[in-house]
Image 1 (cartoon, rainbow, N blue to C red):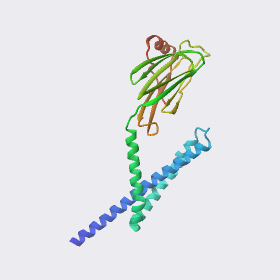
Image 2: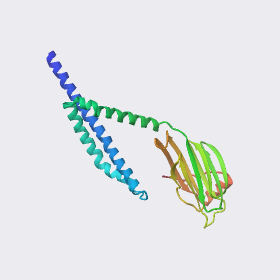
Image 3: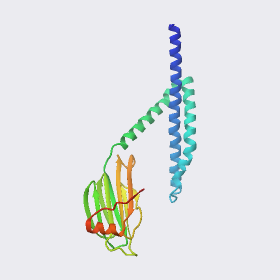
Image 4: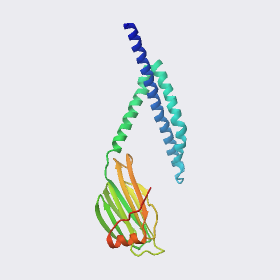
Length: 238
């Protein structure tokens, strides 16, 4: 009975070891496949910086490298843990622990919300008069002057509307925004006014990001902004 139980336990431990080796190897192979695709996408962006679709090659390559990496890693993990357990412990095991720890750290950083330094450049027809209403974490600020203008705000959530005081067909206004130095773009140019709402999440723009919504303002919304200091309601998510 003891011999049978001992044999059963030995067989069970071997099966568990094989499963662990396959899963660990597949995980490492998956990570390396994704890393390879990311590197190729980055190199593509460096070689063709003016092509906005250059980085998308990483998604195409990942369709091949990620599953192939997982399959190859699973095979190597099963092979090494059964025939070369010391080699497995010296290579695949520490890589698995490292990747899991790295992903855990990234997840933690993405969950740690931290305020951003937002820079808003109000651009458009030089000299045109504008009025702006800015809400930074609920605190309202009114801005007025002539284009162009530049403002800095720090907070988690920023909402603003900038409009031309005297809209004319030849005049235009747009707002370029950056968060902690990361250029978020301008949205769209308008002959009346623009509205944007931004909300940061995570520890930084690298380990997190900023969501942005925007809309162009109608003439009535411009009048409400100037006369009643109210924000537009309609918006589209970017």
